[in-house]
Image 1 (cartoon, one colour):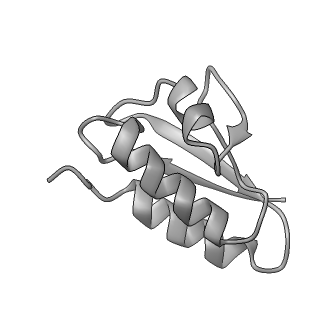
Image 2: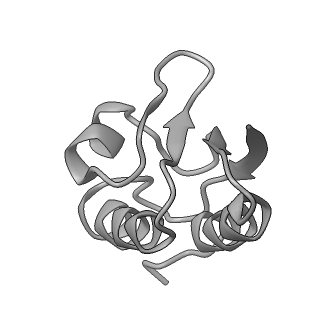
Length: 88
């Protein structure tokens, strides 16, 4: 299992549009990716609803996990997505 941490840069956190973008990207990896906060999770990163239940806001740190040979590169891409403000 591979792990990465990211600080959420979207001003609205993982709500609606940023969550949908992230869930779509997580699904495109073809890997079972999870996201967790210090208080909640892990949840399936491919589910917009599950992501929104985490209550992640701007500046929160999240932990992503995935297994498989392609996981390091996939997680690096997902971290970059989370650390970009999609509301700017």
